[in-house]
Image (cartoon, rainbow, N blue to C red; front, side, top):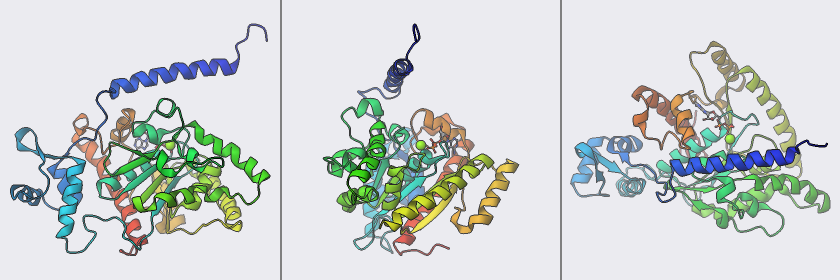
Length: 395
Ligand SMILES: Nc1ncnc2c1ncn2[C@@H]1O[C@H](COP(=O)(O)OP(=O)(O)O)[C@@H](O)[C@H]1O
Ligand SMILES: [Mg+2]
């Protein structure tokens, strides 16, 4: 081996170099002294969120009711996420039917746990999970987002760089490990996004995959698949919805998340290879979860939906693939799709979602088309959530 480099050393060096550059990149985007904060929302955006007119909001403001919005150029009113929350509380008091402006769960209703899965990387899991979690928060739900992927993209979108911010742990692993698990509250972080808390991820999560087989061999009766669900029970009263961004593999983490889940969202990019890979995924999921169910795991759920992601309506083969899925899975495929959009991928480059980015950097049509498609998908999911609480019929 004389003179040859060791692969572990080389890869380690590359990782260190890359991590340093990424850290610098983040400092540039979000300098440490300017804490990342959520942008303000125009009165038009807020009116749309509430399904009321801008004039109605203006009247509230002129009457001196509700929060005092910031006044921008040209007298435009700008609301912070806290203002939006305060408005919700005000409007809910006068609402004809309860839950119109504060749609979260009530006492008798169960915590919704939505697992976003597929073992194809790039199928849009993280993008879907992040936009869903943030939209739910904007719509007045109390949301917990969990990054279960050691690659930690969901965390990065919410301002965490895994190898810098989580040196002493702080992922879900700390709470679900078999030795000295910590209370779940210890790994939950508030975010700059009002209404959304996050449990970040990093490579520590891999430990659960390594430890579980050892534990299963040594101590029968230690059920790995209850780990996530039992932990969520500790914070149940703090949230309405939990969104779990799963790793692109069917390991113990994903299985434990699926046991905890009350709903499953399978993201799928409508191309032949992706759909073939999804077929393998579904087969494996069915087999493995069957085993878990036989061992006493909870496999009941409220709903399962496929969501078509990065869809290009002008692409013939993609259209065929979508029709094919609809013919096979019927109403299990969401009616709306997430369109492929440079607005979504460009926002991702600056570690933001479409709900956060400054829209002036896009042409209006590009931004609005992407926003419309995401909102439509998220609205369908919110209907499913409401239906699971028995408040609404879905189809
Ligand atoms: N609707 C979309 N339009 C454009 N780019 C998208 C869209 N959804 C995802 N992407 C991009 O595709 C890549 C993979 O998406 P991601 O959500 O990270 O997938 P996964 O979590 O399944 O690996 C990311 O770079 C993301 O920015
Ligand atoms: Mg991902």
